[in-house]
Length: 258
Image (cartoon, rainbow, N blue to C red; front, top):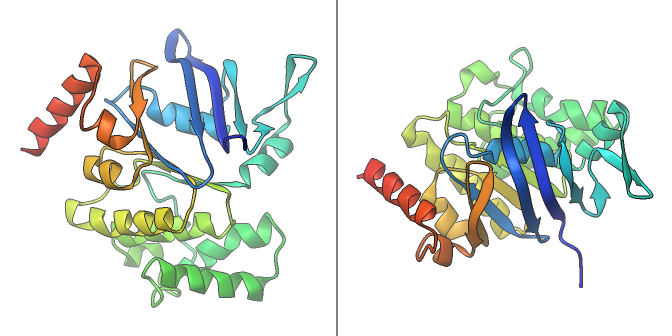
């Protein structure tokens, strides 16, 4: 038996008195696409940020590729890693945010090349070749010398995906990658994500795109109020939900679409 690439056990997280995650268990196998669904405030984004230690968990444990994230375990007692050690763990994980976070003063090519050169110390020429390949892969082969403000939102988000892939991650996290886009631009980003899934990239995706979850996810997790309410294959969770909370949410989403 191989261990899952992501394994979360009883993860808790609070902001002050507000308990946002109340004991989350989740596992993701290599090559699997897991979509996290749920209403605003359910803890989806917080959980995603906990996986790569942008947020510090208060309880439970998260492993990525059998590496305990953010901590060392000595005889059952956890010791927090220092910033440099956490940054080293994070190098293996790509993350794409709602906002594109591109450097405005750099060209598209420079945005993609920055981290592999600065963080991984790779040779500039080699990284640039990889970056051009990635741009072609996300349908932006002709935009290497453009600046972010010359691109549409969908194009900027595709550059952000290419930038994350440039680090050659073992895992990709997507935090509502289409929520800041105009509706007509959503499809071009989801198309790139579909291609990644077909190529076997392990992905955890916070999304409200039900059709994408239904078509692409191997596993759907419905969260509400800091709990996992229901999880399973999309045909089960989306097609035949067992929990009232899930049914209510899906009804509400359908009403919004209608």
